[in-house]
Structure formats: C-alpha cells, structure tokens
Image 1 (tube, rainbow, N blue to C red):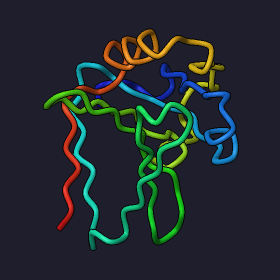
Image 2 (spheres, rainbow, N blue to C red; image 1 turned 60 degrees about the vertical axis):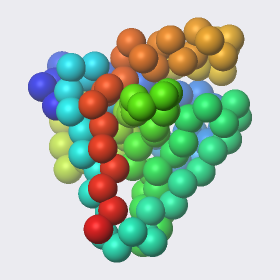
Image 3 (tube, one colour; image 1 turned 90 degrees about the vertical axis):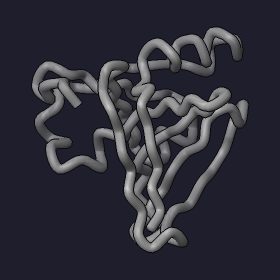
Length: 123
C-alpha cells in the first residue's frame, strides 16, 4: 500500500461480525494486494449479512484478515488493520455503517474505496 499508517484512519464497520472481530478496514484504490495462504486449508471463508462480500480468516489463529468482493473478473478487497504488524501506527479508527446503505450503494462504495488489484494465492 502507498498509504502512510499515521495518516490513515481505518474504517470501523458497525456490523455485529466486524465488531465481534474488532475489525477496522484499510484500503487504497490504487494499491495492489496479494494474500498468500499456505497450506490452502488454513483459509476460512465466511459470508454474512447481504452475502455480497466474503471475509477471509486464518484457520490457524482465527484472525480476520481481509474482506473481498468479486464482480465479474474483478476482485476488490480491504484489509483488517488489526492483522498488520503496523496496527498500532494507524490513526484512530473512524466509524462506518455500510449496513445503512442500499445494496447498490454498498457495492459502489466498495468499488470506489477498496483495493481493485487483488490476488488470493493458495500454495
């Protein structure tokens, strides 16, 4: 990512799933993200709410790593700041309430804010 942690405020989603996991999301629409999972069976996927997005969790430690939205051949994602080594360097989280958005507004917001060059590699 090209963002500087001290100047980046993660978005703390107010849905019950994100609150239960303490998730606060960061993304940069101009960034590239590669998530590597080894072995592949350690990747756990979960959908909730509208089921439009898929949460990626580490099957080894249970940490919520990312949220992914796929549309056609495009994959968008945001990363949970809490799973990053620099998690304490980020600006304080700001509240976000995607539940208040209509489904098409929600996906339009994801396309605008989330990383749009995403690969999930299982090896």
